[in-house]
Length: 274
Image (cartoon, rainbow, N blue to C red; front, side, top):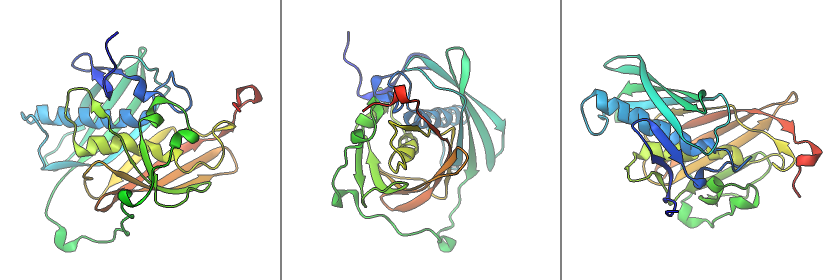
């Protein structure tokens, strides 16, 4: 067998992809973690936009300001496809939709608003303080909390001691998003955002399940660089629902927010791993 690539995905066709073991999920290693797939969806949305504009790369005139992912089911670590279409065309505002299909059924429905860019530096403001540098803090083995190939691929550096329901940490990965294809800073950034639900756990994932059924990202600035800063708060409600809320940072400061809706339930006793 040839060695596995140092990437989360390999392209097998114009719209088809093979995940590597680095995508193995935290709840089950036979299922994909959604986080890197979010980055691949951005990569394909940007490629679709560039192809429509007759360019190798999407123009800077429109930028993704919101990305929403509805997770319709689990994805096995097996080949899948992504198809992108324009829902609302426009010169200054457009809406694109990406559908991920696996084992013959839709698994993720994603939508992205692309908005016109303009110079608004003279009126910008309102963002919070930047996080302390990731170089100033020590790595934290998130594998002490979670299993799976995706978690094992990460460099995680908390800026404060993680507490139940509260954590602030930097995350990066040495892996490519897609083998032999360059990806934008935004695609690589989004590929790490879904990690947020795992850095501030309120209860042990060996005793409770609290997967997110969606991920929504709003950006007021396009992120830059390799590090993703997650300033995360997790709330468990009294009726089986929860919310993971995150202020997103890059090395320059806040860039936006992410929200994840959680479904909470105890694992049956025979599923508890000790």
